[in-house]
Length: 303
Image (cartoon, rainbow, N blue to C red):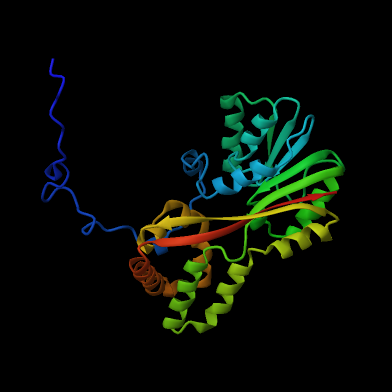
C-alpha cells in the first residue's frame, strides 16, 4: 500500500475547456432589475430554513426573551417557522406556542415541520396580526422577529397585542433600525442625483424612514399601553464582493428589489439600475468590498 500518495493537483483545463465552459467574464446574468417575485409552493419549498438575514435578529431575540414555565406564546410573522420552532423547543412541553402569518405557502410549510420535527407544543395559524384570533387576555408572551417591518398598520397590531396579552404579559420584538445599509442608500441617492432624478429622493427617504428608531418604536409600545422594560441595541455587517454580487443575491431580490423598483419608474429601470450597480462596483473597488451596516434592536414591553 502506498502510504504517501501524490497530491492531486488542480487542473484548470478540467473545468475551463475552450468553447465548453464560460468564464466569469463571458457569463451573462439575467437582468436583475426585471426580477418579479413569484410566490408559489415551489418557491417556498426551497426557501431557506433560516435565511441569514433573519438569523442575527432571531439570535438577539433568543438571547434576551424570557424563558418561563407554563406560558402561552404567540409569534407574529412566524413565516416558515423561525424562530417559532426554536423558541418552542427551548421552552419545552410546559409551554404552548402559536405562529401567526398571512403567507399561505409559508404557513403550509411550517405545518409540515410540526410533524417532521415532532414538536408537539406548536400550532401555526394563517392570519393577520391586525386581527389576532385569540380571546382577550389569553397570551403570556408575544414575540416578533422582524415582523414590525411588514405591519401595514403597526398601531392596530400593537393594540391587538395589548388586547390578547394577560395583565403582566410581555411583548418582545426585534427589528432593524433607520440607518440600515446606509452605505448602499448613500450610493442610491448619489445615483439619483447623477441621473437628474432629484424628485425621487423624497420617495427614497420615505422608504428608509419606514424603519423606525428606538424612540419611534418605543412610542408605539407606549401608545398601546405597554411599559418598556428592556431595550438592547446591536449591529452587524453584511459583506458582498461588489454591487453585481449584491443585486444578484436571491434574498436581496426577494426581500428588497420590489421596493426599489417602486421608487424608480419602470421605464427607467434598464437605465438606472445598471448605473447603480456600476457605482456600487466602483465603491467596492475603492474600499475592497461592499460592506453594509445593519443596526438592530431588541425591545420588550409589559402590559
